[in-house]
Length: 259
Image (cartoon, rainbow, N blue to C red; front, side, top):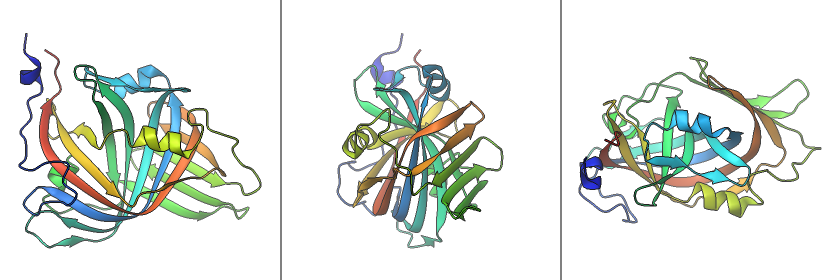
């Protein structure tokens, strides 16, 4: 039987994840995020367990049940944290996020998977920060035939399809999972660290995501459905933040096995 130290085999990148600014010598990405949309759906625990491959990551339960958050970020400007000064053009990235807890340490950890982009990322940093990202995302922001604002996000492989419509004359009383925006923010910001699939099927990538200037607003008049290859669910709640500063920092890899 391996010890915890052997199981948690991390190839640590030099530097502390608590630094307020990204060290230019570290492997990371800095970006201005114009807006971030989060649509939360309540799912059976079995769905979360299917999506989280690490046996020692236990999905967290909200008051309403287990949750999958579908996130979409519009990255206006991005720059690597290496010596390179090359900037990436604007793009959308979507992903699913499941709040978890490491059963060995008690630490809050997020699992992030199924990352998609609306164009191909060419920079070398993308192999570490977004190693499994797929360039097949389609975003539609506009109005329907009844002049309602809508947001449609779909992946061309039909894995995910989010449809949100704003009804200005209807307001959600409350979400089943969160009593108010502060409850959501505590849940969503419980950990800056997340694990994500890597190019090696036996390991996961460790990323620290630090945010500044991020304030969440409840989009109480938006309703919709998230249709996925795993099932279809009504959206419990929608939140949006605008004009945030994000820093993704690669912190190594961790083995997925519990043996």
